[in-house]
Length: 363
Length: 268
Image (tube, rainbow over the protein chains, first blue to last red):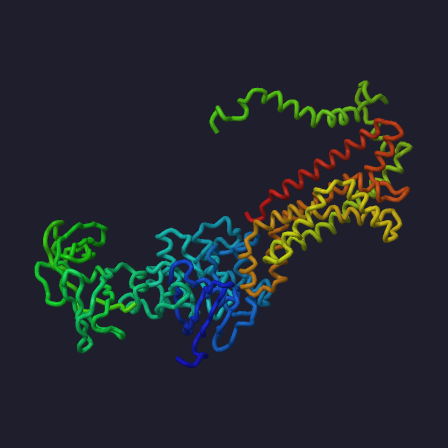
């Protein structure tokens, strides 16, 4: 893992400044070969800037970017073996779909005939063979998206960069494309670097995710690690829904931390590095890992009154007023299985935490 | 739009419209109609005839007009072509050159000649040719025409280019095209409607020019406008109306082509 030759893209201490504004501060991350890697973050977090730096449209202020061990900083975009699927697709409007897909191959030196043949194969991969002769404007948004994908894949790049390519599609189509993209990545074995602000999309598709905010890398890990073991408040809050409770730490023993939230409720959870007795920190608890019950469990329960039930189809969301404490959200899946009970608003109940559900966040 | 605010309901709308149309087009219609008059008179209609058109081509002045027409069209063609090439390069630099320091002054300098009174340009051009010692003739007209055609060619090209997002060129370069290939294969075809429109506009402006041409032409070299002017000074004859009508027809065709070229969308 330390040898950069094993990494498809190795970003080392990359900094990007525009005048006084720092868009990226000291980002270091290694993207493995054959990986579906996602840069996730809210708009303005620097994810697209990083992608454009890899593509060669932005230069690196400090640090370096290596592609399979080779420094690429001084290569112009057309000499980098990476291709991009642009957010607005940027299909050449005056060329047919087939010419669009064949363009990269032609520029790489293939004859027009070879390029057309390979372009035809790529169109088959994205199931658009029957549209080869059309102009991009005659296709739907979803079809244009697939042409853009085929065009970027046709020259067999070492790394494919995708800049929020699904953001213009409607929800159903987007979900279908997420799965298709994942399949295409598996089939071609090309490293994908995908940029998105949609955390659900990132969790669905990625082997690993880099969560970014304000030009900094917040956390790097697989979907499960990012969701279940967020490293800080930003990641916990940005990825999925969560209850963020302010707690004070009473005691740390044997890797367990005894915490107290307002209203004098005790909760115990796994300790993390940097947690000291007396510290005011936060606990993140996912709503689906909480259970409403008549009976409490010592150290894992909060007692309160049901404020509201919200029916959302797959789940029922219950808002609890914890006695003397904060409001807390509990999500109960809408099934008949188990002995789940619906507590009506106004009734008293315990909120029980599953083992390991609470995650301490230092910052 | 509601009926109350519709401009057509304003008092005097119909009258103003008709007045404007009459002022604009009545002279042209009179010239066109009387160019088909059988009579030598400019005011009395004596029947339909093509004799003045025949006079233009075979009459005593036909040699002079043929040479003038040849000069006019050849100068317009060369001047419009070169001006369009220069304007295309200028538009590429100004629209795609990023935010360079002299960008706004450059844009101003290239379009300013449209607003400068033509007589000033004419005098300035004449002084320039005299001071560098050019002999006035065909070449001086051509050089002057190339120069004043540039802003006319430039404007439609720039307008078109501003509508083309630079992601197309980024995409091309991402797909291994060099900057030059991206320009030739992507930007140039997308700009083409603007370029054609600019060329046609420059062509018409050159063909139509009188003031500058009259200053910088040498003795004996005439373009159609100067030849017509020379003829008129010796008395109005209906053959001038015939030439004017032909020139008018040609201009209408060119302007129409220019309009459709600028509207044409080569992306569908």
